[in-house]
Length: 111
Length: 111
Image: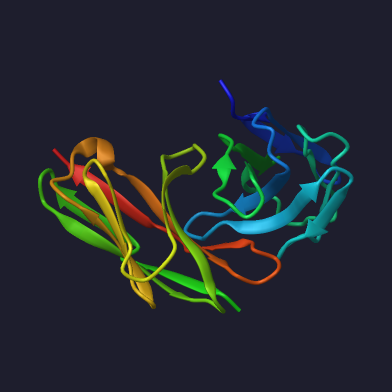
């Protein structure tokens, strides 16, 4: 079955540590996205990529980094510069400009 | 700047009690309005896309409608399995074409 796989489902970060969230899709979509979801708030865009080896900052990119070396993969690194990283992180993909397909999410917490 | 406001924030219904969820939006040229369903701890699941005022779409007990300022998600004779958070998002016709999400309506249907 085609879809988007996020791992791990739960992740814990220590002070000063960088952590990487994985996102893989087999839908052959060109565009991929990372969103952050906090309780009671809408999804906020962190980064997006419309093509391999290219990506753009979203509304809340500070403290995060991404790479897009393969069409299928779009990992997100939460760096130590992100002072409030606790949130539910969602990866999505789409055909350009069309509806988003979402993964099952990663819950990141701070130890 | 695109904005999306959903109301109410939370809604409790008895099984079979029909109601509507509201999504008000401001956007510089609407390309599409999207409805998603999100279960706790999971990624959003696509329901509908509406493109122009007057358009309606239906799926089982759900019906989505669109005007120039708002969209409604009508739920007819809901069942407990319809309990979820319903998210609305708009996509502008600008070059970025990114989605702006509302904060959602948490629906609980009691048996």
